[in-house]
Image (cartoon, rainbow, N blue to C red; front, side, top):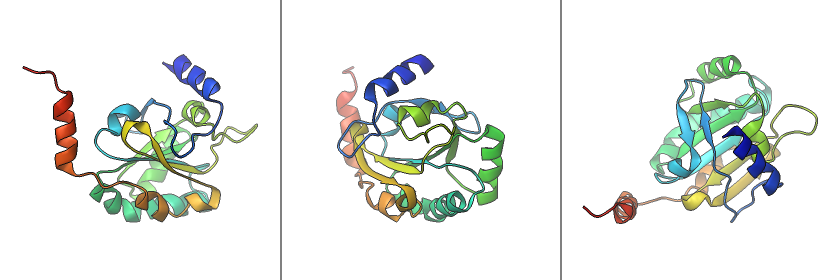
Length: 177
């Protein structure tokens, strides 16, 4: 799987932009829970927030703001993955310090960071990028740098899905009995 992710990243060669299909992935968070993007978007929008370094000023401000606004994400049936190249144990401590209710994904080898082409040159750190990804993995919004610190625009870009519409769509895909 790692090789297929890397090949897809090299073939793509550019940071996903609004209107494009986001690269699919499967990752594990700090607690060992797996997340697959193509499955996540079936239930609502996904905010994928790459940040450079735990416990630094901008990253603390960004992730604390997401913690404070997480109820807004949940109201939209959204999910949030915070991704950093930090070591897993550092992300566990960072998540605990913020009392963050969402998943933190360690990417110490920069596999996901490279797939989304947000890795800093030379350094094994992610540039600050936030992607809002909707149905069929379509990129709805991209924020970078200082714009990505405030979650307001990312949350506003999350489409409100009617639960009945989503259930009907899933039911129409189910095989007939």
